[in-house]
Picture 1: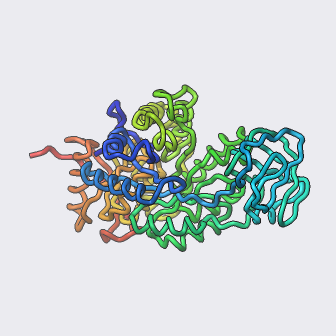
Picture 2: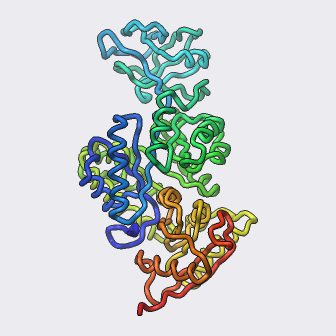
Picture 3: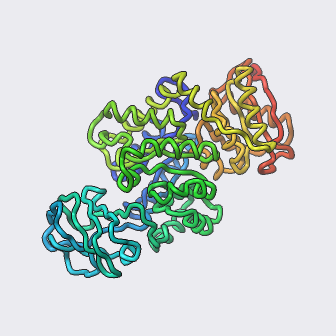
Length: 480
């Protein structure tokens, strides 16, 4: 099954949808696949493991019925910094008033609150800023020691139990992996997921810690949601398999006006590195309740496509919203409209990274150029690990990429990569088999018909990972 828009045009940018209470039935998940979802996100910040396991089973069953690989992203919760309980919530904080945060577990009031995170007090200095409830309340630290911080309220508002705490511009002495995350990670790996979303990334060492634990059993998506991660983006990118622009937390810890520029920077860096990049958070937020998005939201999704994102993501819209299927369908209409704009191709060509001095990069660059020159209808890549298909994706050819692989895990991971139609197939044994199989799959996927041409890349000896060294132009013959 090919990824087509409702108009029948090929769609290169992928759709990630979060599953939740609004999208857990077999019928709904099936409808989401038919509407255009490529990768499903299981958000382990919410829901019981049994619910996630049931959704996983439904996806795998649909994968068989639709004869199409589907990716699954397990998004770890990460450390959650929150205030404690209040005696009579909510309490109202007013600008200019003093307010204390401390380790005392006594329920809070209008003068103080419990903050059960000694690591925050260890990192704070006078003059630092604390943000509560997604930045709605802002506090300026006046005095601090190991057990409490005296602050002045800069922006007031109501404060109630368990509201989140953000500490912008400070590196907290915290691992991104809590005890819950470690347990969830092993659960997800055993279940069988392709991607692990790593929250609360501050340093490249955080990604290295996760890589050691995952041990190659899944790809790691580093979520860029903290200013410290932005400062070390290149190092984090190098250790990650994919990147997520987590605009929600970025917009809390940084001035919101800088987030659009950061989105463009992160996408450009990921594309140059050849790593898939997801744009996430509030893309079609109004569709949590409304049947249609706002014009601004449509523009936001289109902007991510123009910027060169590999995927755009739905969160609450598909997990808890009233119109999950419609939200996916809207994305599936917006994406090809942007991709078929001549400006999109101009931007894609201008942002193309220079290839490295390797056979594989040279062949991938040449495959795109040959496809454009001769008017081929697809580029077919034989890949074991997925690296060849990712190189082809980085080139952003004007035609779809067939990622042909004998490895089911690779096929599922490639569902996140721009333009790649991952197809599970037996490994080829000789040159004729390579050509015939690629032509047959291209025809079956409705990417080529009789007398069309496709460009094929592979590695000889066949089945050798990372050995891309062959480029061949094949003509699609007539059926007999």
